[in-house]
Image 1 (cartoon, one colour):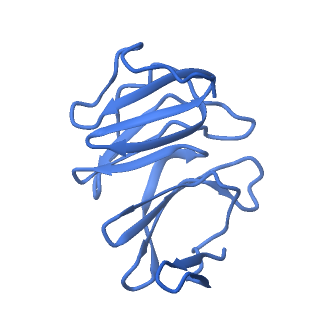
Image 2 (cartoon, one colour):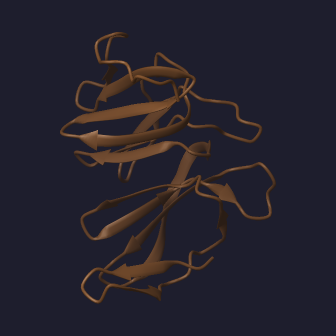
Length: 168
């Protein structure tokens, strides 16, 4: 479970602290928040076609991995983001062959999971990011851009955002 770290100033890669367990492919969701790097879900090594439900964090100052709990379900190729001390995670798939999910869950960083409004369009192989207080999602199966208001907990009405010129 090797992790490599890129030093922007030295312009080189070095071996970092190993993950607590192995993940395969690029199906884990990762993002940075302050001094922590989060790795959420992903395909667990040795479990063919199954995902992980683990939430791992790398404390960049100590360069140590920690376990921050579990998702309500396994997650492959999903999305995760933090906004206002709340973790949002979901979408993607639970297992291979791909069984796409529209469920998105949230929880305080140290609390219980809650389901939020499902995404109106089923998307696979998603890409997502947070801008201001909105989570934007695009993916396979539709050229519709979805956005989720992290403050109000609602998805944009279909057709509100422009459609991509090509489907995912």
